[in-house]
Image (tube, rainbow, N blue to C red; front, side, top):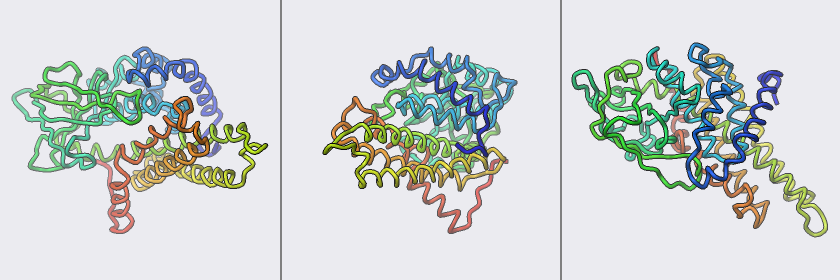
Length: 388
């Protein structure tokens, strides 16, 4: 672990959080994977321990700690072998809550951010639409101003925490004629009339509730607008760098988890009178994978350092996600192969790891979209700027 980024306090936090996960989370993972529903008690336990407040202001119950506490938080979450549980936690803590922290006014923060930090309320972020995918500017959900209210109509899909959350951070068009310059952000309570959610059946991330959301003449007060009207697109874009880094860190952490398990399996597995860890072809495969993971992790840490220093690291975060998620998929494929028939069995971790890993190159911007973003920067000289 790099001493440049991690102090003794970071190391102590990692150990205590790892112990917490083993005691409070791991015993329930199999149940949550089967039911697709995470018990509410664990959210409150996370809140009581301060884990949802690592990055957030003390004024609202947070700890205002540096980003490397969050890196540790994300890494250790991947080692409980439930991408769905991890996703539910970080989608609340770093997607929904990031918008509350950055665009919410004081009243909104007191009503939603404070109970989110304490684990009393769960949030989700609603951007992706059935016909939009990675095309944020092409969203069709509208928010029409009528008197002292907005009326929302449209739908969102692939929303993590979309079924069981208490509130939703929703992007909608307030000026459709302006395209992506006419998007605004709102906070919406779950129990408003006209809002419905349908749970989606997924290949992986089975513990999390991924939903499709419908808004049928949902009326919300003008005060639910977050930030300025029609500034939603730059708000969304400026947070994408952090989301991509999150998914990159998730990828290198689950790759390390898979490799550690596979290496131990190889040491224990005997064939032809010797441990299969002595076979050169297999040893060299592990050496190659380990090298790729270490390079990805080192780059991810460097990108986190840029964000910590206030740099707008869009290029680096995009590259980090593109490369780290590809490496993770390669690791899962090869590690499952190294376990032979056992890798294909649900009693061993590689089956679930392989399913959960596959969302990496899709969620938070597909690899195809990321390559185009990078191409615009490195070939066309495009320079992305933060929202002002």
